[in-house]
Image (cartoon, each protein chain N blue to C red):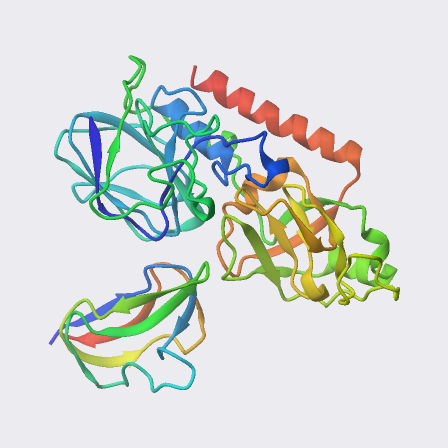
Length: 80
Length: 325
């Protein structure tokens, strides 16, 4: 089984939840399909969804909620 | 000739060197946030320095060319790919009809400038092709690009050649960490205490994620302490309020004394926040290349130093022109 990384498309702040009082989009070990949102990147007053990009199981998140991230930084890994 | 937008990127806009002359009636300068890089992209493809290009922030668009073209990408290290094959930044290259220009993840800087020989031929509005999205003015339909847009390209001069590049010392990009932004204390300097003034220039600030074409916000320094006063007529009650005044391009307002905001190309032209000073013209392009969380220090300069820096920046542009003539 191969592992694929999900990269942040943008620099900004990474969020694992759609809103502060909502549950996280995905937990470590959850099953995802390609179009699933796994988090948000906040930059320039906009919130941009990060998609899984592949079907599989999220092995683990590599970035924490509210981490400052760079474009191209791996934020999660999926078993595909 | 047209360029089709397959994917728009985050906030890709048409920009040239801007729309000066209307700021006093509330229409901002607009134009590229890094005008040196914008000029370089144009000169690489044989355009006039001020032709309209695409400014892509943090993330590149995906574009399909309907005719052969010469293209250059400058500014941020936003690596171009032609039909998936890597191309160099700061170097002109040929694109064949039907080929797709896309971009890899941003490696450094914030804004890439994509010039096409002939320039982006959108209508001139108040003397400029620049987009002022907040005012729905200029550029492509007054807004950022969307998938499905078709950008008209002007007639290319014969000088558009592939393989021309800009030497590193002519690129004018931010160097060193933290990035130093030179600023002159302004008319409202007396509103803060001496300790607060010293703190402003000695603290290290970080670019806030909200920073955009309107203003660059910074966090992480100590809040400014104000000299007590009775609010003058017309000023709000917060110590950072003033009787409404003009906001210069580059002015550093500090609402509530907490987070400085440097007004940039799409800024509002006036309001009621005190301004601690103004970032000098020579360093405004550098701001356009700052990513969120980049550390920054403001360095105090006087008018003489500011003018010398402006001269030196304009000489850099002169050297760029000579190198690509």
